[in-house]
Image (cartoon, rainbow, N blue to C red):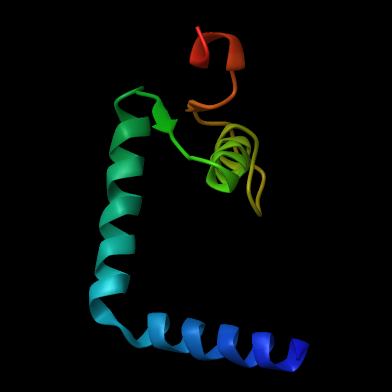
Length: 87
């Protein structure tokens, strides 16, 4: 059964890699993030349910470092302050 999940993941990654529209959208998003940071702006990341945890993880990768030594960039997951969210 786990083999089926791995196969499905490989098929999905292969399809995404070959899809020019997906690659263009990702590259456009990367350029927008770079412009945001170049303009000294902060990115705000949202998620609902389990995606809230993904938003926090993504924010941590932006604020800290991902794969290489670099300065941190300003980012905030909007789900990190339950007092404000539930007020």
